[in-house]
Amino acid sequence: MVDLDRIAFFTRTLGFANSMANCANKIWIFWVEDLTVNSFKDHNQCLTVSINTPWLPKSFFISFVYAKNLRSERRILWDELCEVASLLDGPWVVGGDFNAVLNVNESKGGGNPNQGSMEEFGSCLLDCGLLDAGYEGNDFTWTNGKVMRRLDRIVFNPKWSDLFSLTRVKHLNRVGSDHCPLLLQCSQAVQSFTSSFRFLHMWTHHHDFLNVVKNNWDHHSGSTGCLNFWLKQQRLKSCLKWWNKYKFGNIFDKIKIAEDNVTEKEIIFQNDPSSNNREALHKEMAILNKTLFLEENFWQQKSSCKWLLEGDRNTRYYQLLLKKKRVKNFIWTIQNDDGSILNDAMEIKRSAVDYYSALLTKDNDINVDPTANDWSFIPNIITEEDNTFSYQSPR
Image 1 (cartoon, rainbow, N blue to C red):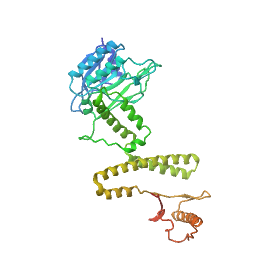
Image 2: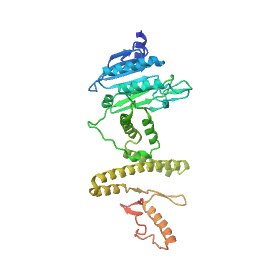
Image 3: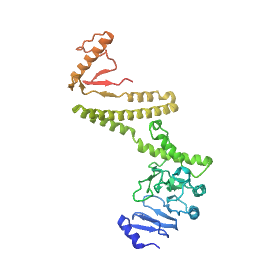
Image 4: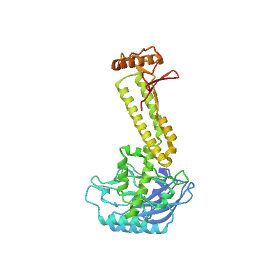
């Protein structure tokens, strides 16, 4: 029997407007006043509710699971989920403590999980048409100090993925419990059309790329054969879209930020040329170079794809991309051998002329007049534009 006073106390304490418990009083759910939650089917190991929100065109269903420890009792839960799947028609997500794993990779320590139990769990998900949502964080959601297993998970049906184009599950840290809390985040696509999937070559340069692909692909889809391959592809596509958004983001914005950071560290180093400041400057420059490398890789792939589509018509487009990459880095100060700093533009020019004059005279026996206005002895390296001395990187 549900202790109404106790659940009401926690509802007020946690700041929710409403609450509900299943018939066994093992599953409690709380929600804010903007939601309309109705019980769809109650069971001692599972509570299924329908949810209506003012910002979604249709309702969806959530099943909260708290499975029994015994395999024989979990069979009753699997039958219950299959019955719920046959009754409802709409987006459906199922999550909680299933007390079962799908394969031996979801268990570490102790003996191997029971093969029959894994097969029954997998058959249930397959019969219900439920797909594993994947996860971020710790691979195992439960531990007793010696054995670790992924007993908690979230799965959903295809109509759920139609309603929410992006579904993320995070395994949060275990605090005060032997289970990890699961955080479900879902959102709808802004576009009214289906966006195409594009594989970016720059992903392969990230140190975590192969692990992301492997971890996502190795998770059982609940199916076999060609259907298994297709389901894994769809799941991997969604995973890489999210991974690209949060790991790479807008690469052009990151370049601007990296450039500003380099400028800031340069000013600090100029005012205090210590080893720590030099190290900080080199670190920011390395980040900028890495970001520029990713941008170059992006444009290379984009120009190659466009060339494949447009052929010779793409000549002007490709040349514009190359011109865009010819970036000039302006030199505002120069430090002499004696440690003095030159800030004046004309003094910087004279210092550069003296340096290259001595360099070219020594190596090539060329005499250069430092006071001359002819700068052709160092072509494509030093230019004079708007009374500003600049260094152009050779390509």
